[in-house]
Length: 378
Ligand code: ZN
Ligand code: ZN
Ligand code: ZN
Image (cartoon, rainbow, N blue to C red; front, top):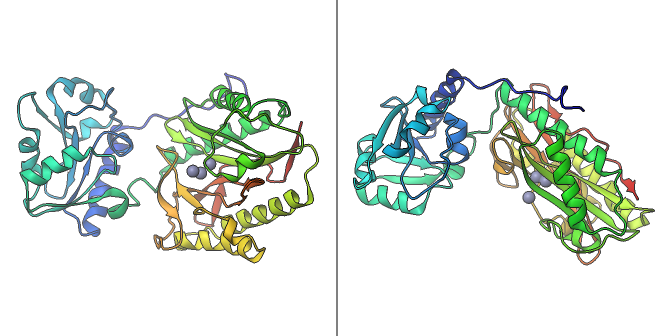
């Protein structure tokens, strides 16, 4: 891929953001809520395109309720920045000035006895401020009350997710050609970060290089360990491209793998395949976890699969809904999430294989398409 044939993104319009906001109002009503309160972070970016340059103690809050047009409350000094965002023309902007009580300014937007979902990353001081201004009001976390808030992607979002996945695949295609043996995990991780940027990512979120025993810790990033011949290595990397996430894992081996590495890798490969094959509209999230987990349990490694099978992805690289036992949210076309079973043999090695999958009318479409066979590196 050269610079000139790198894909570009179609900009989102004010209408796109307005459609998201009205869908959220409808979904909140269906969930028995009086509305949704959104603070700076991924929810606000997705709903308005607005991201304050610095998230401070000053209250910024988008109110999505049935009784009024979308209203964005901002500090007066940040009003010009808010006005410049693509989606904010679809909101009524209200500002409050330093010295005034922001919660008194927020109160008219809320019902005194109302029940609301609030962004997971809202500052506790803001929630406490609303609770003391309106003692009869009630709040729940977005993940708990509106887990599908950002889950279903439109065609423009799917195009960005597809581009991010293809760029991560291109990075994998290059990383398997570099030298692993004799280099530190952090050296390979730096190569991966550079490749993600080279192929169009504006942000790198993680570059896991878990060699040998480090691979048995699913959230090991990369350390000083020098990679040796014979190591099994978990590579798990991703970030944002056009504002949308990539996240893929492959497991490689430096030189000839042992019979045990081959066996465990094949079990994980089949589990991942079973998870992806289970994807279709109407199936619930926990069924994806069950499909992948069954293969690993049947092979005798159930105790060594120590995390959920997947997570949603969109304007962040980890978000609801989760592919986990107990999550009964049905899959809907346009949802994107990871399918990433793993087996972790403490003190020895780990294997994980991960693709992002988009739900279509027919089933699941993988956004990561590099080989899932055990790749031998040098
Ligand atoms: Zn993770
Ligand atoms: Zn990952
Ligand atoms: Zn993941």
